[in-house]
Image 1 (cartoon, rainbow, N blue to C red):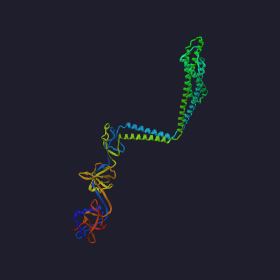
Image 2: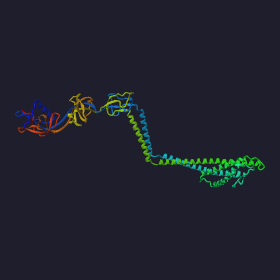
Image 3: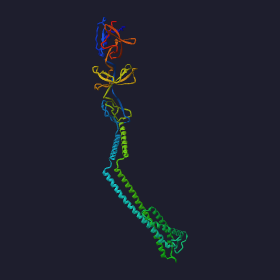
Image 4: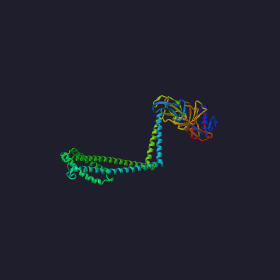
Length: 533
């Protein structure tokens, strides 16, 4: 069955042009048919599919920058049009206090690091020698203090013995002459005249008690030694002296109240008074001497304890000087360093919040910030666009977006320069969601210039041909010569002298209207471009 294809002369010419420029096929025409049929000789060639869109040149990035904290602006070293590098200062607030804190913290870090290095290096020979000298001196001082303590102990023993001697002399040597049977169980006061009353009873009772005291004390004194418990001996002696002093105070009352009579002369009374007074003076002196001896001994003992502690400290310091650094000490210094570094990082962060620096290479487009003006947090202080790379923004209709993929190559023609100066671009992004423009669903794509070119400016209008498919060795024919019947596609081909319908399977359509033939035609076949009927 024949398929009729009605083509006007104009249609034939356009189709021929499409084949010649789009498919790259060799074309041969013949008109030897009776009706002047024209045929195309099929040849394989390059095949391209493209989508045409328009767009506008935009910067790759456009930024509006603000401070994180409010404050007065102190410096604005840029103006509109200034080209800035990454990290360059754009606007700043007062940072003097934070800068000083940061410098102080960094100095503290260096100090801690120096201490750690000193710890790891260990002590020098000079430091060790100094510490050894300190230990030797501490030992000498301690030995001297121990000797002084021993001397104080010996002096205390002598004082204890002297106290006993004075008490014994006061009781037995000075007052026994006032009693009858003074060392017996029932001593009687005998002053030549009756005393009577409670005073006489108390005096006689205390004399009886002191006899045992003096006797026991004598035995204890015989055992005195610096190796004994001198503190206990001191307490014992002071108690005995207090008892003796109380007795002497009581004895002095009747003696001092005596008057001469037929039983006792004034000379005797005067002697008694003198002996009792001397006994009292000696006992009181003994009490003072014991107190002084005790104080001296305690002082010397305290010096010994203090110097023993000083020697231990010096020996410990010497051991530390000679010992290697302990892991715990190293860990402590390292922790202190990390803490100081964290403080420095925090201060640096706070400092950075007082400065706005360029995050990219760009051009300043707006500078609302002025020196002295207070800017609130998030208030726009400066704006800039990227200067390194420009892009083309285009909105593709829903019908064509399925053909476009990221990294597709394309050719852009800028209105400013015309078709004679094309620019190579490529698709770098495709929005996943639609953008409604004039009530129509479109999808925004961005294309990046392959090479930087100073001629390209932000805001220029561009017409772009996006190459969505590119193949080599493809057989293709003009779309207009393909007929469809019962869901199948046919072309009319010449076989010998006959023209027959040849079923074909097709693929993509090129940007100039050629259809890819996947099967049904071979290179060299002749297909009919027109028919007389």
